[in-house]
Image (cartoon, rainbow, N blue to C red):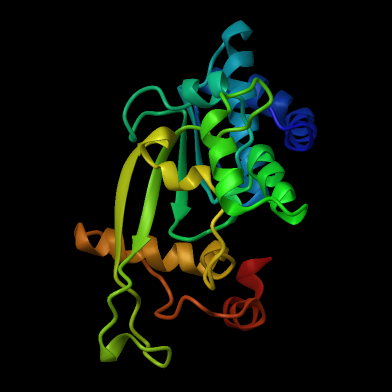
Length: 237
């Protein structure tokens, strides 16, 4: 696993292990772990570690699962695949990736390829090297089942920057290898914008509404954090 996230996960486990093992598990509770961005990566590792640990407990949780929004590639191939066993409703980890979000694509191997570009290598040379290289033990992968949230780029006159309507979104679920586009760093004008939590909230609300599920979400995905903080007030604390 990624050393930094593993350190963070160990720190979280030290603070919650006793309560989960001695209070929640004996009462048959289920545990849902979640997070966004760096918190999502930590949540994935906390879930994987707890899942392995609780097999030795006298009482076990009824179930444990992680729902991660925009996690970084943070596990080796074996653990990442283990978190993807089952279907999207039962996998140990469910990772959401929003369209052009750069963070789920920032693996150590992709950063190495960017470094080569910075040293003067051509895009063609880097791509050839990426295709030729086999996976290494040190390569990091996106954990669990993956849900790709895709934004339809075909905008009507109502979908301009001044529109108050949410964008058009669709979703596909599968394993990380089913989405080769997350194996490469792609920079676009929306690489950072699509990483923001309000965009994930909007995309999920639109997809859910198509399935007849009503979720509360702001109409605009580009709500500034300061504006959001003022709107929700003390509820955000």
